[in-house]
Amino acid sequence: MSESSAPPAPVAAPPPPPPAAPKVSKSIPNSIKFLFGGLSGMGATCFVQPLDLVKNRMQLSGEGGKAREHKTSFHAIRSILKNEGITGMYTGLSAGLLRQASYTTTRLGIYTMLFDKFSDGDKPPGFFTKAAIGMTAGAIGAFVGTPAEISLIRMTADGRLPVDQQRGYTNVFNALFRITKEEGVLTLWRVNIVVVVVNSAVVRTPGVLHGYCSNESTQLIKRTYFSDNIMCHFGASMISGLVTTAASMPVDIAKTRIQNMKIIDGVPEYKGALDVFYKVIRSEGLFSLWKGFTPYYARLGPHTVLTFIFLEQMNKMYRRIVMNDLEGRSGL
Image (tube, rainbow, N blue to C red; front, side, top):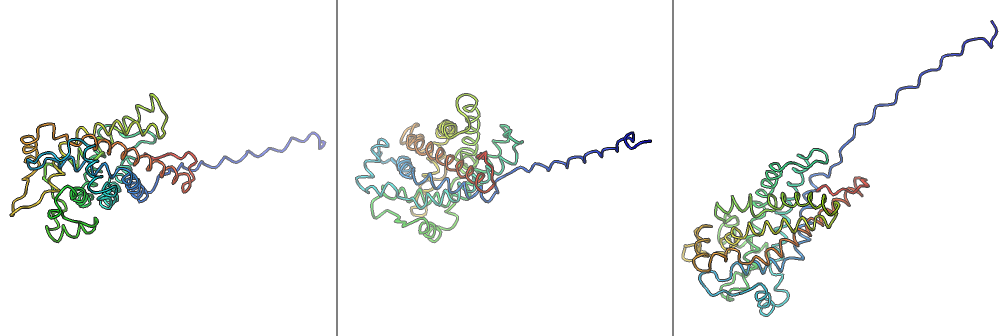
């Protein structure tokens, strides 16, 4: 047989392709989530601190059966500018920043961590899961942030009192030290149990109302008008802020008055939240429970918007620069 008639040599089959590497889900570390949560809240506070001041002054106006000091928010602003100057609008800023560093860091860090944990890929958690996440994050955050908040309330309230009755805290750390020394460490968490349960776990924190309403509003706005961008979060935050304000005002005014009250001859000005409600309704009228609604919402809306804008942008930058995620997803 000639060479030309020899059968061709068998061709070796190509090797099978290597198995695809498992897709690793990229997630921002929890420590970074906590850090970004606090920084975003602190950044927002620098813009809205004057509104926090006006809100607290309005909620304390007319306390103890006295004539109302401020008829409207604008009247309060004019009075503060006249008597305390432009810098007076930023009274208590150090306490506001510490509150965000403690409360918002904890709340948003836990909220985003649990939100990611209970999300199924790109599918967010369901209604009851969101509510549980928000309640958990809010309650823990409120507990951690209460000492800074009681300092903030007292510092912003000082300017409305005669000089001889003012507490005169120089900054938040001075306030914390003096409260602990003069009234006991437990005073830093002074608040009626009703306020603790309702305000911290459900109402005060945007964890439930904001966390749920904002996410639901975000999904609705994304489906209807915008994509997942700043305008989407702006609209969702404004809607959720309105709901939060209307629901939380009565509890917030009770909290403000209890945390600001003095002990006179061993007797506290208020026995608890229910006593605040009774005295406010009897002396100032039912709708006084919503006193300060305008500055409260004017503060909550922009603060929520700015916080989530800052948070979203920091998350995007971290994903893009550190994690090389060119999609730049926010992770909210």
